[in-house]
Length: 119
Ligand SMILES: [Zn+2]
Image 1 (cartoon, rainbow, N blue to C red):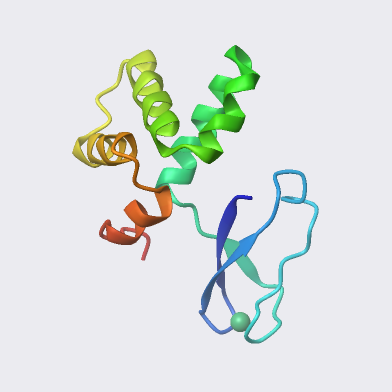
Image 2 (image 1 turned 90 degrees about the horizontal axis):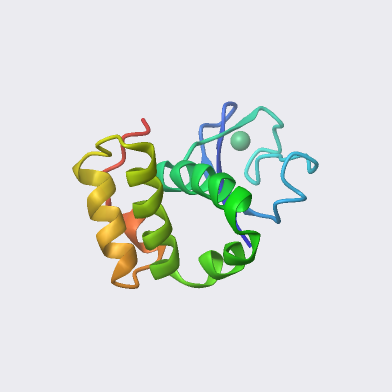
């Protein structure tokens, strides 16, 4: 099940919530520390790339989506194909992420080791 990262604007804590794609957007999220509903989604760079990729991929081959959640290599391959399909230079960070996915590292593991540009 995908994990979503949120930031609480009341107490500034960051937390992750696990929910399914169908729950996302339906479920009300509140801060686990102070209970505030003033939370905003922190976009994860990998997840952003991945959701774009999943969108493109869903148009082409919905059957492959299931494998992407299970297998980082499938995700890496898909991201690589996606970036060449877009014809843009994705930059060194993207290439590193894809390389590491293709070596079988999990997106969570890779994200934890990348410098955070989110704050
Ligand atoms: Zn809070």
